[in-house]
Length: 284
Image (cartoon, rainbow, N blue to C red; front, side, top):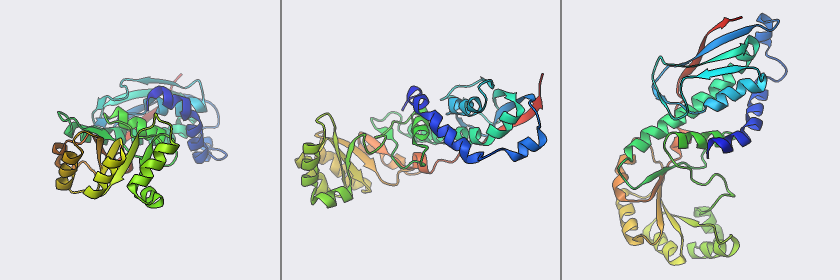
């Protein structure tokens, strides 16, 4: 997920977020600002982290009024510090007030994910293992959250159900066996698609190998069992470790030697990065 792709798809979602927050009018703002008055407000950082979502933040205001001007002193992926002035937003004060919450919701959420991803990715430095996200994203926020993961130094797993074949436990149950599920996927899917199989024990790993799986996910296994599985696979398929991976326990998995570690926590458990719009004042 890159910035170009996000920009192609973001406007509709940002409009939906604005419509959620403003059904007919911003009655509070309209009460105190009866006519247009130009103003300026500062974007301030309240804790250390990695910034992500600058364009989305800006787009909230320009969708409300294309004449809104922004000036940023940082770019996506930059490390930011508590107390740092990140930018300025200038425009109709009514627009600045009405767009404030939605713009900050996006920027705080995306920056929080980038920050948390960066912290975990740092723990994998020096290893061959890449950090992946999952589909455990906030509804209607996936495009933004997966972009934030990449900004923080992680990699994207499949974007959605149309993007790749991942045979999980219930797919295997529906097919009847790992072997049958792989055979059916191989028959149905385009030949350019890789087939990944989720396994929970060494017997399933062996069956996935024999069936010719391209990627074998080692799901919720102990570190000891995963080491056995990696030795058993011996490079005949790519390997992915998954299951309750967090910043606190990922160091225990680095030495296993898997190709990928996927973590739903990157998107479902990352705290926001605390940011604020402050010191709003009128300008000529």
